[in-house]
Length: 400
Image 1 (cartoon, helix red, strand yellow):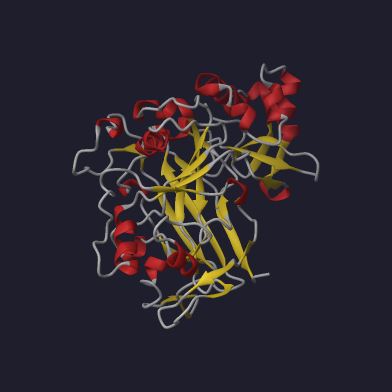
Image 2 (cartoon, rainbow, N blue to C red):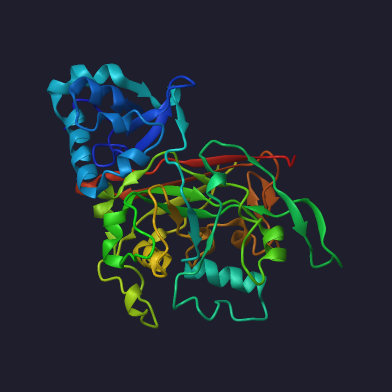
């Protein structure tokens, strides 16, 4: 039992302890850990106690911590747990606790590369029916490999960052030629992201069994999408400007160690994947996401239903010898379930804009300027606890 009392059922208890980067003044970003509604300044406590890796907590990102590798990071997590469990440390720890509402959360990692997958069968089927009604819903390769695209690392932003409506080319079915202007079909994608800690050399491959040796932790992702720009550009090379203007992530990175109790069996795969994609120890996770639009919950997508596991995605990402770097981020793709209330994008919820649905008393399809979207998630933790991921939130601003 911690000496710092938390309300029963708190999603940020001793079994969660997510890492983030916070600041209490403009020039003071450093590593903290969340416990309840407070953030512990790990740099200050580590320096005061002579912790071996005190220097990594004084950095403005988690990258230095992640480079220590899984064994050292697990040892550091045990040390962090002891700070809250050992009452003799209360006097040292208490002066370095900050209320979450009193600090600014920063982007937790320096993003090296960003890749987004397309791993939900329900989502891929829905999008196929909407975008290609006269063709098979799933591409021929979809059940043979995790399809993905390479995004822009420089447009990954932390939760709370406003999203400016993107401009680009778009051509509606009723138009005879493309026009340029602000996106008329701005959308969200509720996703789960995986942060790479341990890098690889160019030319090496990562097996599914080594997922836990390379992935440091998990974040929530909102891959904002301009569906009209996307629809016009994506054949034959896939998403580009319709995706690359902004991707938001939650400020808290939940370590894999916190998610052991959330592991579940993934859906059966048919046909059997090729050998390099065989995942005999999968990290399928029982996460329930919640999508809130202007304060109203409109969907609860289930991550456990994802067809391709994060280990398979990592194996496929590197099978050609592509290297991993500390800070690489790859996302699951939109999380959607088979029911309408489980769809993780407004494209699906409104069926391409043809079936408006009610949000706060108004009929809606796609995002309007001033709209705010928040995505949250919970997972089962050890000993009946709950693991929280924090919200990834963004508000839409008018095009510039």
